[in-house]
Image (cartoon, rainbow over all chains, first blue to last red; front, side):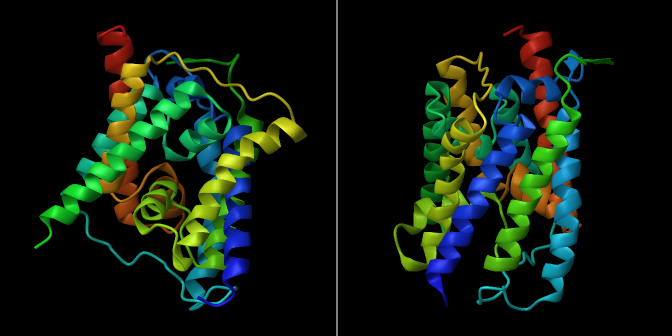
Length: 144
Length: 145
């Protein structure tokens, strides 16, 4: 990788903007996320607007990204190439959806809660990291 | 369907979404990487402190640093969590395993994937959105937890 320090700086800035966006959007408040998922209760549709704003910018950014072969800071464009719709994508989504529906926390907001020093956030993130690690240990063990 | 108008924040949520989109734009255009939090976090964990992994650690650190900056620049962060510790652990395990197995979460599939018009991410997003809604329905209106 060329210009490693710039890569680190831009990734750090991106993370900060991402986190601030989550907080402004209300995504870092699990009660608000659960209110969005609770369509049978008092529904808070705010999260549709988060998706709208993010995808609106994202469509433009990825349209530019697809035209490039290298990143602005150098190095290849790591755009996903997988297109197969398999059991993994559906079952993985279901498992994630169960966890998301229980607590109203997904990985990004989990990190924000951790940074905010929320005890519940720390418990959630530790359990999530254990989940990630257990999965990777099992998948490594399964490989021939 | 009853809409909770007292907690509805269309402008702030849209503006927050734009910031999230800008963050994803920076990462793909400058670094050539997808802003998928679960994937970045997973690889940051597994890869350890090696040169090619430092951008991932930096991205994760940036998100973790954001609430402190918000508190300095803006003020309080509203956080309401009524889930108890046992359910938080169960939720965390499901999110960790599910996002690893399904290779993505709300950011990687829900935002970046949909922005790329990836059918794979559309299916993943529908899968976790619908399951999330069913789970909340079960927890709140069936089990009453």
